[in-house]
Image (cartoon, rainbow, N blue to C red; front, side, top):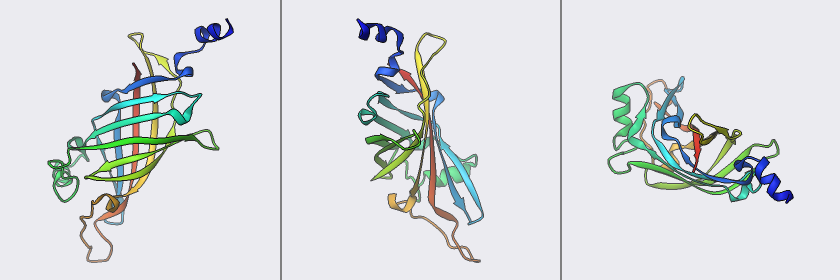
Length: 190
C-alpha cells in the first residue's frame, strides 16, 4: 500500500522514463579559436534522439542522439559552405554525427557525467559530457511531461580527422584544434 501511495504522489520522472529529443527546442553549439585571437561560434540546428533516465538508477541512463551536419550555421554563408565541404565535415559523405552513451555517473558536486561514443566525420571516439540537469519534469500546455539538460565537452577536432588548416604569416594557424561543444536539449516523455 505504501508503494502504491508513493507512486501516486511521486512524479513519473522520479521512477524513470523514456524521452524523445524535441528537435524544435534543442540544438548543438560549438566554439573554436579563429586566427589565435577570437572564438567563432556556430550551431547545428537539428538534433534528434532518445533518452532513458531514472534518477534512482543513474547508471541505467541511455542516450542516443543524431545531429544533422548540413544544418551547420555560423552566421556566415561562405564559411558554412566551407565547413560543409570535404575540408571539414564533408556532409555529402558524412551527413550525420551520432552520440551513443556507454555509461553515466553522478559526480561529487551532484552533476552527471555521461560517457559514450561520438561519431563525427566517420571517426568514432569516446567523449565524456558534463551534464547540467536534468531539470525537474514539468507539465506542458498539452498535458505532456518535459524536462531539459545542458551537456558540455571539449574535443580535439584532429582526433576526428578534421585536419584542414592554414599557417598564418605572423605565426599560428587559422583554426584552433580544441572545440568546445554545448548541447541544449528539451526532452518530451513518451
